[in-house]
Every structure is written in structure tokens, then in C-alpha cells.
Length: 223
Image 1: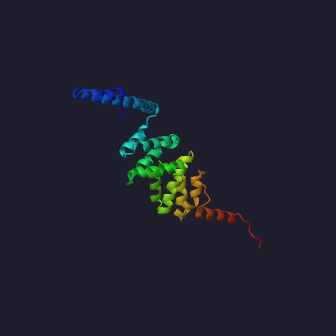
Image 2: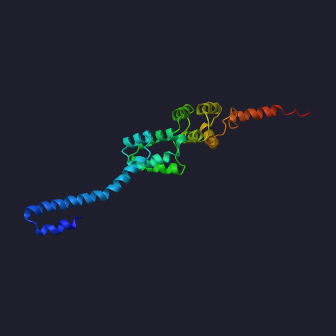
């Protein structure tokens, strides 16, 4: 224990009453010295807190709802600073995935790892519209999941109009006898942001019509 040497030397020569008072002075002196030693660190902590950027309100709400630690929330804030373009969609996706998780903190760590490795797939803004489209044309589960993921990438990386793209895609669905297979074949083009043109050389009926026209144009054989 910290103590004042002068007081310590006097204590043995004092009567009981004064000795008790001297001991109190020694304890008080030790507390004062301890406070003086801690004070600089407290000032540093206060200064650091004052200069720290406040958490984004949306991140603070997420952290409060799922009882995330301050450190985890701060890490998410730092990660999201580099994702301004997709911030809104990313946060909505995190709300959904953390809400479905038994361990929101661990799920968030995994999702942030995907973000930092550019493997994070946010929920597409037009998710419900795409899902309705898949149900309308009775696409199988693989094609449905693939189309939603493809449009998520298309929406994130390219300046496209999802509703307009689906209208064009619907034309091809109407003329295809193997719709799920068609989606699987064109998944790469959709993800890459390629134009879904009105004429997309993929529908069997279009190919048949093209061959038929070519055949009609052939000159007749001389008999």
C-alpha cells in the first residue's frame, strides 16, 4: 500500500487515539496518490471517446436490437464506411439474417468476413418482384435461387432497371418450353449486366422461326 513515510515513522510513538487518526491520514494519503496515478488514463479515455466518430444510427439500432457488443458494433461501423453505395441494402439484409440466427453476434462476424472478402450477397431490393416472377413461370428451386442471386449482383454492380429487365425476360419465358433451363443458361449474362434484349437467341420457337424463314428464302431447284 502506498503510504507517507513521515506519518509511518510517527505512528509508533503516538498514543492510541492519535495513532488511529494518523492511520486514517495514511489511508487518505494513499487514496490521493492512487487517484493522481489513474487521472491521466481517465483523461486519455475521455479524449479518445470525444474524438471517436459516433455510430451510425442504423448500426446503433441493429446493435441495440440484437444486443451486440460495443466492439462488434464499432467493427461493423468501420466496415460499412467503405460500403456507402450498398449501405441501405446491406443493413436490411443484416436485419433479416441476424433475426433468423440463433447467435446474431457470430452470424454478424461471418457476414462481415464476407463483406471484407467481397463475398457478401445482399438481399436484392426487388426480391419480392423476382420471387413473384419465378412463381408465375413455375421456375424450379435452383433457377429461382439462381435468378435472385444473379439480380442481386446485377443490381449491386450495374446500373440496371430490374423491373424492366424482368419484363424483357418475361417475353423469353413465354416462348420457352424449358424455362428453368433457359434461366440457368443465361445466369452468367444476367450477373454480368448484359442487356436482356427483346431478341435473345435462346428460345426454341425463335430458332425454329429463324430456320423456317431461311428455308423459305432458298431458291427453288431447277427441275
